[in-house]
Image (cartoon, rainbow, N blue to C red; front, side):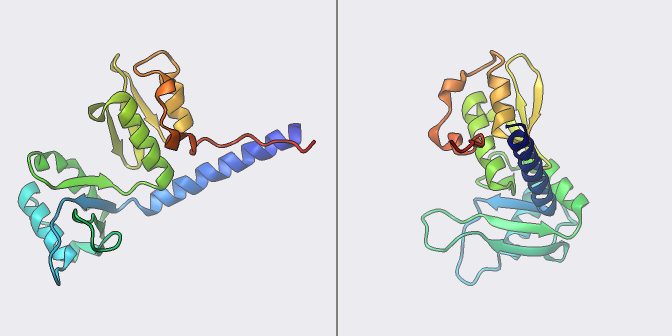
Length: 189
């Protein structure tokens, strides 16, 4: 049993390290939502033009972007998100910090989180309200009703916050979030 527990701890450690590496590879990427799609459009030019206008950033141009494209398949009723990978991390950070200037527009920015962190972020928003949850450099920040901030990356860390008697009870976990919880290793009979 002790050997299986050690193996499970090693697997969890490796999974966390893999998540960290994946998030690090997405460090220079932002997603832009709400930009209308057009025929034969260049998403890079559209995104840079709209963001530089709203955020008043003159240094933002298609030359400062290394990769840019829409996510998903065409044909939906709402515009697809645009993935932008910046050449320079400091410009990406400047754009991210200026995102509050987008209030009142249809355009929003989000970080390109890995699937497990994105699901954890959505669950955190359900439990603590959207205004009390945000991301910064791939880390999910949660503000409790008492004013205490928590930095989380997994659903288990989120459950530890709600189980401490704060905000929403853990019984409000959506069924999709339960898929994120790792199952304990079972020994064969």
